[in-house]
Each structure stands twice: as structure tokens, then as C-alpha cells.
Image (cartoon, rainbow, N blue to C red; front, side, top):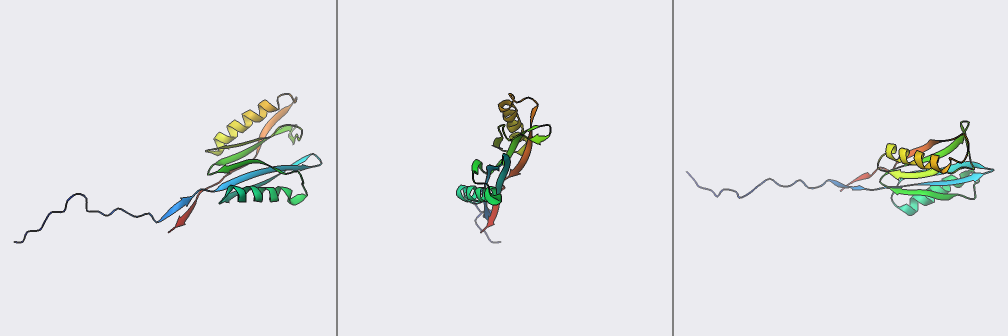
Length: 141
């Protein structure tokens, strides 16, 4: 019979990570032509600058020259709430751009803010006109 030392502690090797999660950016730009509002939106970009540039480019793709960033967001969801009167967009009202952890949370906040900002306009009712989430990307080692 032979003797051998008993292993001390846990001899199981720890699993090594197989990759990493990269958080991504999204952006929403807003502009108009002849009082008709248009949006440029993007998600899944690796930097804020890249997301904003893409959103501005998309916004201006139909000739809008007054596009501006309404919201930049990282690793979250975003929505746009827009005022409507008689089920038609009301361009003189105030739109609301909100980012939150879920579309539902962002929608609740955006609708509340939009309706509050537009309560002076009789018959105005806000609606969500855009929603998206900027999902992380898994990069394998």
C-alpha cells in the first residue's frame, strides 16, 4: 500500500471566460421639412460619436438641414413620444426622448412627459412613435 499527500482545498480549476460583453450605443436625431418631423435612428454602435453621426446622417437623408440629436444612449432602451391631434402628428408640440432599462419604463416616462408638455394644446394626445434597445455584443476571445 502506498501513501500520497491529500490535496489541499478545492482542486477544481476555475473556468476561464470565453469572451466579453461590449456595450453599444444608440442615438435618435430629429429634423423637419415643411413642418413635417422626421427622425434618424441607430443602435448597436461602438461609440457615442459613431451613433450620433449615423443618426444625423439618417435624419438628413431626405433633405432635412436642421437635424439635431434628441437622445444618445448606451446599453439601454429608448423611445420617442410624439404629440398627435386627431390621430395626426402635431409638429408644433413637444416630443419626448427617453432612455431607460426597458422599453416599457421608457414609454411610461416619455408619455407622461410628452402629455404634460403638450397639455396646453386642446385634443393633444401623445403616442410612442419609436422604440428600440441598444443590445450588448458578445466578443469571443
